[in-house]
Length: 259
Image (cartoon, one colour):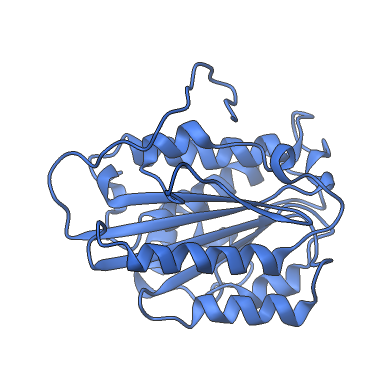
């Protein structure tokens, strides 16, 4: 379990859904690169890149968990390197925000290896989404945002494999899926990450502009952000990534500044 700077998190079973009924739901899928290069310390505080990735995912999840809208969200963790690992608890593969905080792990601890299976991670995300769509306990009005974090290139399959799996995600309409991509280093295939990223919806563009994250996009027609400066994860870049992910995670419901 990843605890990060704050300690005392404990694991637990998925709780029964509580509180008022909701009419819509948002699934957030985090695809986290666990290849060996994510242990590099080319960061502003000499901590490993994977530690910063965990901090970003944790901070966003904490923000959602403190929101009055937290019951809307479900979160899935997928760790990938040469193989792909899905966080599971019993029959659950996506969790309420409080449970997601408890089960977050370092991708390098779970999936650490040499090769990188981006296509496999995208395929696993599609499997999670299929289960989410079929879940009778989730409101029929659903939406999905997938965040892909990587500092490498596809080395298990091929580039066309990645493109094919990305298209399967971004072209589906029930529910619509937004694929946002974040590069963590110079070895990432940034052209590919930009290519496979979704085109932003109007509400996403507006939210990104209001939060200041729009200026961090390499191209405002794609949900892709370069999460490094000449290979290094700077403090400014880490904050930009957090802002980007946090903003996109709440745009579907038009929550804007309420979270």
